[in-house]
Image 1 (cartoon, helix red, strand yellow):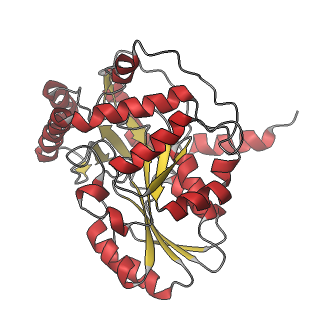
Image 2 (cartoon, one colour):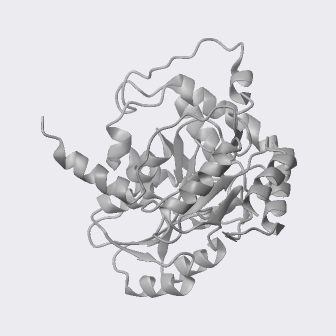
Amino acid sequence: MNEDFLHKKLDERKAAQAFRTLRLHKDKTDFCSNDYLGIIHDGLIEKHLAGTPPLKHGSGGSRLLAGNYERIDQAERSLATFHEAPAGVLFNSGYDANLGLLSSVPQRGDTIVYDSLSHASLRDGIRLSFARSFSFEHNDLAALEKRLQAATGNIFVVTESVFSMDGDEAPLEKMVRLCQQYQAHLVVDEAHATGVAGEQGEGLVQQLGLQRSCFARIHTFGKAVGCHGAVVLGSDTLRDYLINFSRAFIYTTALPESSVAAIQAAYSIFPSMQAERAHLQQLVQYFQRAPLAYRKLPSQTPIQVVIIPGNDKVKAIAGRLQSASLDVRPILYPTVPKGSERLRIVFHAFNTMEEVKNLLELLM
């Protein structure tokens, strides 16, 4: 079988120093995973579920056929209550949730305006929509307003609350005011704020009291929540719409009981982890104040970014950290724009101050 067309693309990526491989990293200090609160690291969900009756690992079908059951219905209601939303719909992952929402809701003649640094799952959902779409410069309110002035039909503004590759926050309060002025529907992906932002880890939207100003919020569970899946929160009408028109919901096997039980367990754990969130902030503030040999992006979240332009150079620095048993990964072009290649350093509640000091010494 001729696979030259595959080799050609792979060779191009190797030549650009952007070739990816899967690696196992054992016995290294974790500065890489999205397990911000240590729920996975400390096995908290497993401890919580110990002694419970056996849970099914399959659902038997899609939600509209055999895959709907009492626990999944209960979970949607409790998630909506915790996040102060009228209703919610569970999806199998954050990717599925963003794809399912944005590919089905905006219609031909509508306009989607999205932050230029929006996650790939948001952009893929937008690309599958029949609506027109335009990006605006990252967190640039003037650029956003200019796009809103030219928008037609139903208007959707899409952003993340905490950006996955920069660690900064969207100016949500000002965005809400613009959306109200132009009658736009605000969609906020809370993936990297869930569990971390707010007194109970409820997310940045609720921390700011903006939950009633959003058309839709997406909370994903694969980061600080420590399990899998996602929920789209919104009105009862939005829930009915997604059940009827979202292909990512309709045409997939539902989450099994074991996954839903893990989500419920995590939501009984992380709201009370104030000490862990406080420790995270101590690590963040210490790192932000420290001088480095490289440019550091401002961030008040567990995601800390050190810019080291060039795929080859950032890979070399990451390799040096790996050799010192620190699991820090390089983020390469084309995942980020050329010239903004970086180390994406992630802090966790289980990281110690000594580990952070060791990391800083290697970056000075």
